[in-house]
Length: 300
Ligand code: NAD
Image (tube, rainbow, N blue to C red; front, side):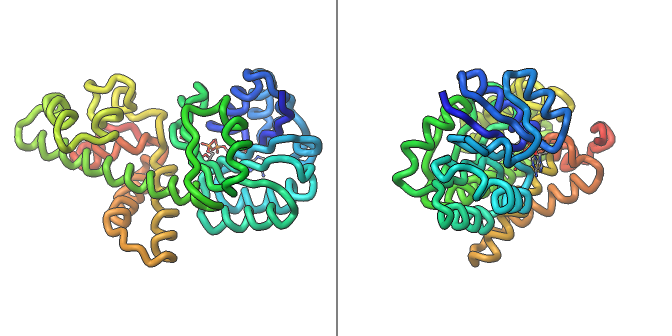
């Protein structure tokens, strides 16, 4: 059984750390929030007082932090140099590609194996241990990384070298943001044309319009019972989180010289929806904005 340091025990990290403890590993857990530490203790982790204490004798260090600046600060000031160089460092946060590469460079220079390993799947998958991991790492390190992620994962794929995991994550989520807006526009049009959205689901989910936003996350209540549309768009994947990922994609596109006009449109639409007071609602709630029915939707 491995000694794991787990840093960042929020909506995602809390469930992920619990699954490592459930698998029998010793999990030294740290978060700035006392509540998060208490929740981690209740699921079998050992709460500690600082990042440096958590990583001191760790074999594996896992971070699940909000954004790039947190990741850079925690690695450069509290993990690198404090953890044994034999420790495997895994950052599962969603951050920009440049910061991921910068942290990988710092870690490598200090003698560590590091991977960016962002995830797909929300809090339900984090709790269930069924996340999909997209990994950017040195090829030779992958054989150590896959089993380290196993208690939290349904599938782990090496995307390429450092930064490639984050690149895969933001490209995937840009596609998801666009496909959800497209699905919502199609439903709003169907409704105006007198076609029932439930009947449109039956057809689109078996036709060339089929995609994950239709089949697994239909934004109209009814056809997909597990979708947040059935819960007034509560929980799920917050609009603010989708907006963060779309901004990362647009920043990356600007730097790389890629043309992503639909990604830019999706970013603008989610910024509008969030700005109107719905940043905490599930991102598929944008359907109500496109239907002109925001009055029916509860604000945050
Ligand atoms: P969250 O805000 O719930 O959790 C982040 C945690 O990090 C908080 O508990 C916070 O106290 C802690 N933290 C911040 N700075 C810290 C520090 N210096 N030291 C220790 N702890 C610190 O966020 P989340 O929803 O768990 O998301 C975490 C990451 O996962 C983000 O990068 C997000 O984009 C990504 N992600 C989220 C989802 C989702 O559905 N929520 C899905 C996929 C990926």
